[in-house]
Amino acid sequence: MIIDCHAHVFQHWQGACGHESADVHLKYLQKVVTRPAAKAYRARDGKEIRPTMLFRPGDNTWAGLTDVNFRVGRYGQLCFTWEGEDYYVQYQPVGMQEMICPPEFMVAQMTYAGVDHCVLQAGGGYGAMNDYNAFAQSQFAGKFTGLLNIDEATADRPETLAEVDRAVTKLGLRGLYYAQEMSRHGYARNVDHPVFAPFWEKIVGYRLPVLIELSSTPSYDAAGYIGNLKALDALLRRYPAHRFVLVMGPPVGFFAKDGRYDFPPEVEAIYRRDNLLIEVMFPITWGGVWDYPYPEAQALIRDMRDRWGAAKLVWGSDMPNVERFCTYRQCVDYVRRHCSFLNAAEKDLILGDNMAALLDIKA
Image 1 (cartoon, rainbow, N blue to C red):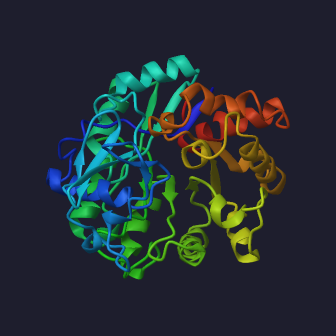
Image 2: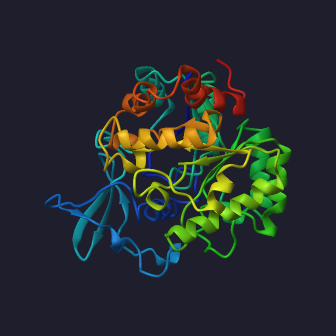
Image 3: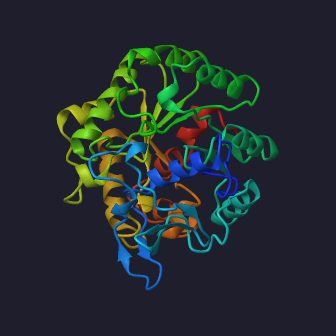
């Protein structure tokens, strides 16, 4: 069984998508594309640009987002206007004529690519997704496992803790997607802050696997990433029997500039924690630089297998976003067909068995 540990469904992005307003949703989206792997262009002539006008230097919080009439366009574009000139970030694939990804669309994609099951992640840019992920899970019980998501910086608030209870007991969501999205409220507290202890106790009490995506904020450099990784490590050591997944895997830009991983000892030690799985996911970030079938990525997968073993690795795509760089089938096949150094048992583990065991997904 092939399981994609990182996929999405979402309502039309023109709306609030579960947030308190459409304006709040747009703030999440604008923040997401301040430093995108996706390409950005000037609308009138297609000249590629860097979207640095979306934020003020020195302020990586929402307060630093500029007023650029940020808006949702068509054909996968997130649009904005700066000094009278229109620009856009090609955030979703060009073929996405409207910014919407219903469950039926993902089922069709899965059938064509040969993917049996998807774990539905979330994050503020997609919307406040608990109800919609639960809807997809209930409508296609054999195809989707939904994760819950909350506004992480408010995890000490009673209403946020109550939302966790609702997502588990009423909606039936089966894991936590934690995006470490602190920019809305500033970066004063990280994931291991003492005030969040009741939240983590609740997650552990419900036995919810945690899929956590680490950023390099607030500094957007290696030191920022390592600081966030150490905060995660505090949780890994506090809850050694609880399972976590490092979404997106180790950042290539910080640790593999020469084509192979070179981790500082403190980083390697954290990645080796017994209760941490690591996502194999390269096309979404490097598909605009490397060409299919991504031999550079294959070399890094081999490196991870040699370091940690196949039982530590899980495959994910970030569908439908990844189709701005390659097809869904190609996103599976660079591992399924082209990682010839993996034997059949190792491919089974990475492409599905490890996630099936983590989330109790049945064939």
